[in-house]
Length: 87
Image 1: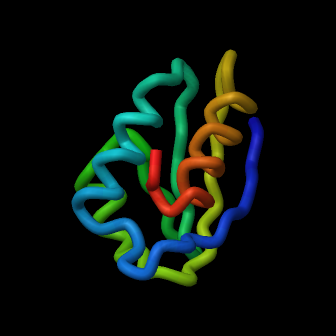
Image 2 (image 1 turned 120 degrees about the vertical axis):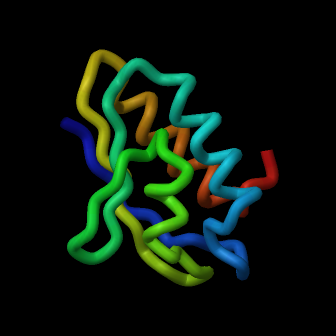
């Protein structure tokens, strides 16, 4: 299992469009991936799950992956979040 914390930099947070980019990126990996905000954890490959967290700009989230490419998955998703979804 590999875990990293990242602060959401874009002002609007993970609303529909950035959440879609995030999920598309998450689906590139074989590992099981979750996003955690405070005490809630959701599947990073689920649009409804991501949207249900209500992640706004400035929020710190944890990205957690477990599987054969877990470190690549977490690093790739952290990079996407840090870029402000400008991929």
